[in-house]
Length: 386
Image (cartoon, rainbow, N blue to C red):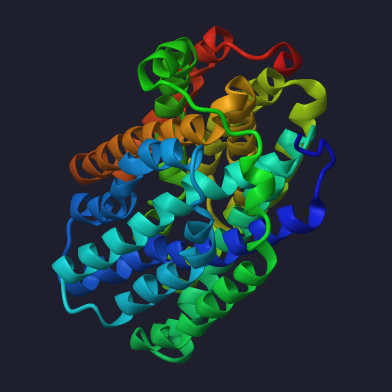
């Protein structure tokens, strides 16, 4: 029987690996203005680069299915090293096709990592699943905070090809993960039980249908705040450094939001935290769009805190709803999240091309408010109701 205690050392190790991994993947958003200028890309083409990196997420439910049965811990261990190489090579990519290829490689590695690592972290969290997912998201948000700053600092102080100097950090991280997690597999595998695909999917359908609607309506606002924020600010006259720093401010606030959201949902209920986020985030985004200058930065802090606070809540809901098939359920969630987020990225990019990013962001905020309806339809576990 798995321990019900929170194993802070191992959970923190996985979160640290998440930090380094997502530091590399966070290079893409602040690189988009560079690629747009260097290769004369449209906003739609730039948005598709994000899709290339996230496309392998379509395989996450398959990875999750196998992760419930066999050891896939080396996906977790190797992830920072492989992603570090692929994302650093973007600095010398000669064209759009090469960029797309490197992003697909990084995306395949990232898909395997995100399908397996949070499940192991959740298993090691015992009865504090929300707290464990908060730690997991804290690691990711820290990486997404550091990433843009590392990217713009490297380009400014060295050069775009200077990204190659960042490869050893990922390799060292993978080595440390190997030392810390090589004995964790037995603990993770003790509770695994076989499951039939069709029966499991039928059982999961009432949960995932409203969750999919909720994710879609939220994704428009999230991709506006993350993927297109540097481009939006650059169009408004901000420098590459300021645009990247703004994204880091947003992600830094998201660290606090992720940790607080996961922890509070263990005590107040998952639904309460979801409702607060779905009200506060779109309203703050609308206010941000009519604000200029230094006043935007306090709003970015609030946007990051409330907008990014619910991912650990959703992940906790998914895992506690299907305790015997955690990795499979998490993989389905990640696959759905990718598909719907990709749809949102493309549509926001198209709206940005045909209208403006201001219009796209405004529509995105309104759509997230509509998502409130599906929070009340979403089934939750008895201990998850607010």
